[in-house]
Image (cartoon, chains in turn brown, yellow):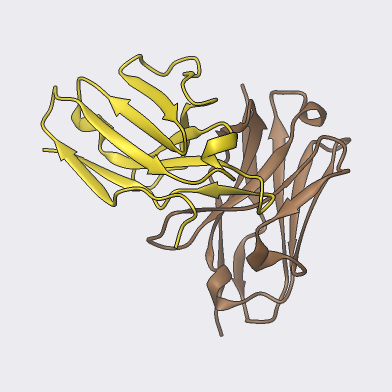
Length: 117
Length: 110
């Protein structure tokens, strides 16, 4: 059974940093692109970033470029999102998702990030 | 403002059919595959349709997808109260080099 479990969310002050993790199981992690998608309270889905199987390609939404870094450790079956210089507008539930056939076919339950003073 | 445009809401009676549209441009829908997601209240999104019109295992054939030019459509037949949810379209935008979603459509089954 495919499972994605996010962790690392919490309350952080504006300008602060957080590192999100996503533990994957039930599939061969190293053979899939992976993505982060977020959802602000009461709002729609926003794609954040994705990463190729070997980490050689990474893409980001403009609003997080230079502040967020996506990475992965295939030996640990884990996906990460390092978030720096956090802003109020980064407050959201962050989902980890597996990419397959040009879609995100499995999603984690999400982890809430709240940026507030 | 989302790159892909969806109507904010749609409603229909149980047993009826509804369509949800998603409009984009040549840099996204026009030249990339479209996927559709269902998000029930308080839960993570679930993949309904991938590569424009294919259903993952376990998704009933009441759900269908199509694409024409720079627009895509999700169809749901035999509506059930359990279909009440937010529905999102998604694709890749080649100009932005980023994934994009529609703003979502809230389906109410009256």
